[in-house]
Image 1 (cartoon, each protein chain N blue to C red):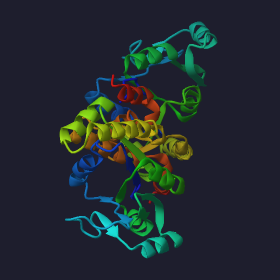
Image 2 (tube, chains in turn green, yellow):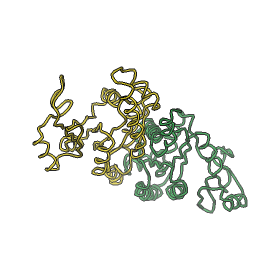
Image 3 (cartoon, rainbow over the protein chains, first blue to last red):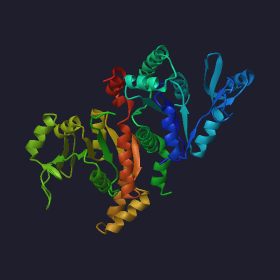
Image 4 (tube, helix red, strand yellow):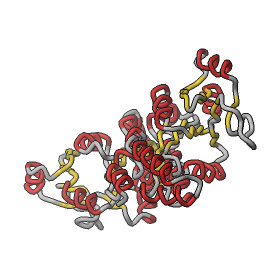
Length: 203
Length: 203
């Protein structure tokens, strides 16, 4: 099978546990890397440059954008966010599988640029269960939760743009399903023309 | 994930060990079924009707063909071979994954009819190694083996028509790779529109 790394677009509604599933996956897969976004927003307490985000000035961000150094970018609440291209390309070349935890619009931008990437959409068991989970956190008003659930519904309706859906029923099961997807993608004929040549030529 | 069965087109050059890989896979996967072909050739010693083949008369075979009861058919050495459609459709409906062990031309016929099927091509580690395996059997002349290897090369060049390639390096590893492919295909978004609806509608 191919040794080239895979780029995985990893999306799903807020509260679905994407980050927890990835954490569980990464614990068993040292050949995987998580892309770190660049942002112009201020670091929060405990955040480290290069871990949660690359914290850059507005001027630096604009320069990265103009130099085509970002795979995608967007603005939220007056701050810019973007995905730096260079570390991803370097990791892929070295054979690492690179995960982008990204919202649906950003994911669509990256897939257009890199159609060889794999899209995985994480689903909650149901929208109702997502609501229960959000309420369980006790950090938001019912009104804010309803807004989140409406956004979640709109995002889930975009799931068809992704190659795979994984239900985050239990974290370990979802992480195992992600692992199966990554493994089997490595056997795709379209990624193995070099292997087929080697078999034919006895290399 | 979807509960509908998957149809798997399983091909590869003669001598690659397709049957052995499937046997190992089936030993751990009771949700899988192997399609049995119909043929007009005479049963050989030890062959059972409905196990190795459905043994039918030329008249019966012609009738099946005319009634569109075969997914594909071909003639070798004056005998007719074909894949009965009814058992496959019935198994798929019940949720079984159905495997067709079939040569490249027949596989292409089935894929045209059922584009939802999955194509897996089994490769030897190399053509040279395939030659070594065939010689190890001590059942054929070097001339016959060379002919087989030439056929194998032509078939391997058709592997690009399949979705996945699996190298039969060791049988257990190849069977495990087949299992990963089948699992991950079940998470394909294209097979899960009903699931996405259920998540949205809290069913």
